[in-house]
Length: 111
Image (cartoon, rainbow, N blue to C red; front, top):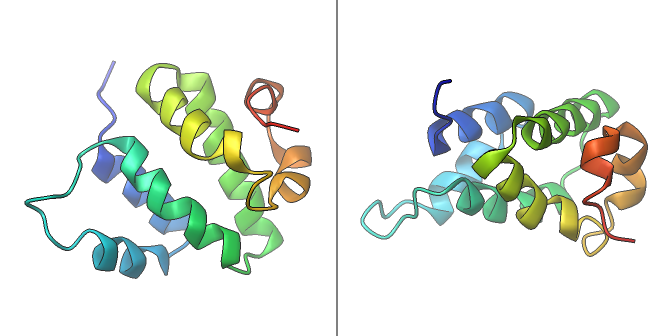
């Protein structure tokens, strides 16, 4: 089993949302103080995607990404759950993503 690192997560999200790279760099430019956690990537990503205007394809790719993260277990699951899925309702994305997520990922979405 290979280890999934912050750079892997960042690469996946940037593949779906190329403009997120600039946001990440701006918020995390000082490497000395940057966290290496998966959680920190999602913590920057959620406010970004909450105001973005994704295409339907991007929504589906994001839902697939989150569903795969949950299915993978461990830190990936925990980061996707605690930093994105549990907060979808707060950023008003639950109605958009709920129909696209796997049943396992849906279990983490708050009402």
